[in-house]
Image (tube, rainbow, N blue to C red; front, side, top):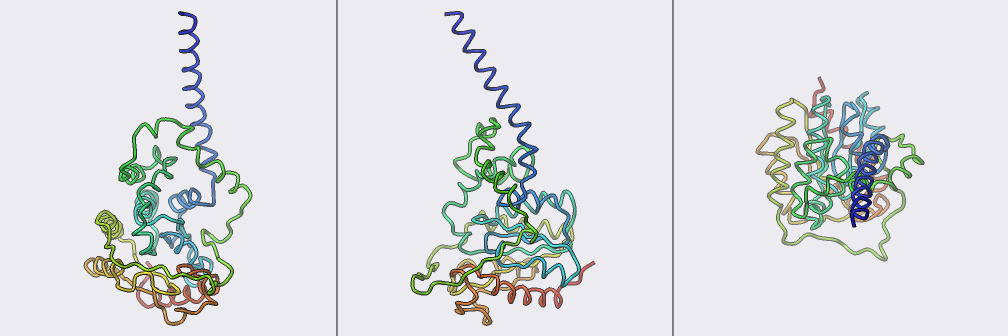
Length: 299
């Protein structure tokens, strides 16, 4: 019996030691990821680009970073992450400002992501950053299903990242976070998504306020946008109206391009209802650059 107990204790020690050493070793590998959601978070925080774009997949696909860089002669990175929104964007901005100040932050707010019922559970995907960034700790704890024991194991924290490591090693992101889409909207199989009754989550409104406050306190210029859609997802402006009110209350530049006339209901510029293809993005990015030229003076 004593021998069995001895071997059991030894096995537990070996498992704990392996887990600990794996966590130390894999952190370096993980920090080298340059693409996907983990690369987006890493780069948006640690790169020192002068223009930083934040948002969800609509941010990721709707801003031509090279065009913005050429227009203003300033480096630009698109830190948009598919399926994520204000909570992650707050953490990205908060941690980036601890390292360096961008000249301009562009936040693309997606009403469809704000009302996403899975937006809290998705935060667990960010567990690999838990021990490194206090702001990530803050937002992960917003998930009612979060338990601190999930952060103890190195293998557990990183087990969802292995594929991203392999994929990142095969990709070369020369577009600074921007991911252009090809193809056009298939009208034969098109079904419109539309918001009817849901209002803005108070916690998400709170974190939008916190992002605005961070920029104000650090004197970083901020513009908040709702990028174009083929057809409006929020025609009653249940979400967009609340965002606009928050921006007006805080004297933040806000523009709603949901029904931008140059692109609205023009299939050749959209991949689907909520995402433009690269042709639409080029037209929209020029429009955004024009507004920035008119409204913002860089230091």
